[in-house]
Image 1 (cartoon, rainbow, N blue to C red):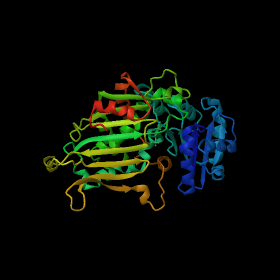
Image 2: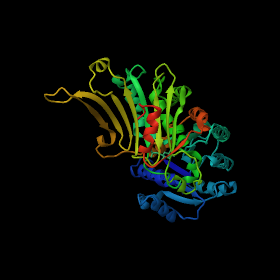
Image 3: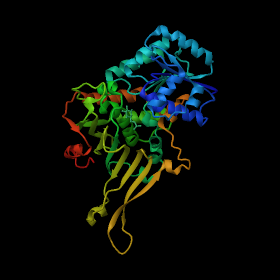
Image 4: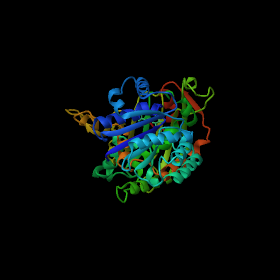
Length: 454
Ligand code: BG6
């Protein structure tokens, strides 16, 4: 790839400033993308490139290298819903792109704009159906329920081939999520106990301390269940529960993930919805909103391997800590049960954020003359093990993969479709919405649902 162009729709938004520009900056600095890269940032507002970059930099407290970005970014004002305005964009693009140029059209906009913008891209001739040097990337959420997602997908297939469509779930680009299949399948000690006979339960936890930032317009329509569980948490669950794939090629791995989603059942009575104090005062949130900013639920994967093992899924905003982790808890040994000592169960921690690595909790005798026992943890951190402390961000990996035609870390339509089908089953439930100030306010409610859940 000699030349690469990103064309970002929604370039004045939160995602572009917080994730996309920093990721592109890093890829460029590290020479992972060509010297001749270009970012065409599209937006409604009347900026020039300088003032655009300055504004983006201000919104993330000065983390951008403006001198560097000024070399490759070009801001272009456009009303993206107006087809007539695409001709100028096309002319701009033609100045830079030749036949071999990799062109990534990134829709960092809400799903309600996916169809209109895609149609405009297609009808204006910016992207030609079947031309694989041109790809269109869709940020999540892909729709807001099964019906809307199906409609979007149906339309997209009119304009682009599946090979041109990249659906983002940025959790798949995180280091430990990419590492999950290696940890599972390349370690005898795990592979042999990865069954309901040995696994007691699985916890998939994504806690955030932040609120909704300035995303009230989107978030109030979505809530934690749709924003996080439908995508990131279900994807993590798939990687934990899937069978050995036929090969590690993208399609074979996806085929196994799909089988997992088909077999998930959610215990409706277990669901706890919460809303943080102060949410109703957030910008663009309806004053009587019942949107969930926290959700806990218990699910099962009804496959021979995992039948009967509870999967506890929990995610929320304004909680006690920022932490994404998967905890696999193993059954006690027969000896352990007989001894009647205060021994713990073994736990495998897949640590995703803020640190990424693996931890294994074991029982051990306290050293010395005593016969007491204690829990000890074997730990491995990927970022600290890298001499340069050089942890790459999910978006760096995903943008680079899209640039180099790699689709493994992007979701296929049937994964999304089945995940929505699952979420739709519970979207109309109206369980009590628990207000919370601290995570502690929710603990007792969760434990009442299941004493092993936390
Ligand atoms: C996004 C959600 O997909 O993931 C956000 O829309 C959430 O609401 C974010 O804050 C969490 O991602 P991370 O990488 O910070 O855990």
